[in-house]
Length: 264
Image (cartoon, rainbow, N blue to C red; front, top):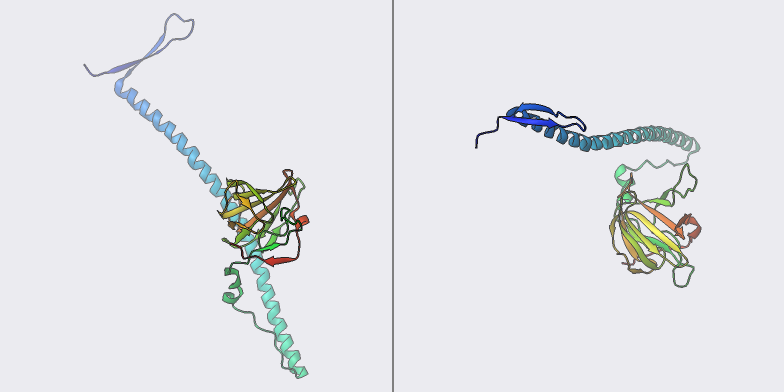
């Protein structure tokens, strides 16, 4: 069979007697098809990498804002250290004039200041008022609350955020049944527990889940390890309480008589 030297491309418009034909050499046709294929692949790759570039640009902007904030805090800390140094000198002079041997203690080094932050904080849970522990009481873990519950449209936040190191045990604040576990784009690794009277609790941004959907949970049981998954800028636990699927302020369920819980 002789090699193909030409390709005829025919365009037949509707209602026209004579079609429009284009006669093209075979090598030229193959080049055009190849270029078109490269063009399609290029467009696909462009949109794939463009999305990553946009995401990285957004992250860079956010990191720049956080960097500026850290610089301001560093400046404030520097001023505070300077004021403490001056105060230490004044106290030393006054003590010398008064004949009293007293000096303000020096600031400990960073290795001592941050040593406690490396130790995992003890998980805590409050005694439940309900005899069976089926109503949420207390917090899932012990830490610093960095963001509270807000139900206004401008600053909506359906729960509270508790800053804590990665790997801290998260305890169920009430007995119930695990209604949902899994990965969420915003909440990260999440556990939702259903309790009585239409109440449920949500524990988000975990690094590891220790329970599965359908498990029966007792109040105080370890259900997860805290983390930084999902849409999160720092390690913390997001904790919600919902009444008939509507988020409410978890602080209304807090019992301040808390005790250490070492349950495995």
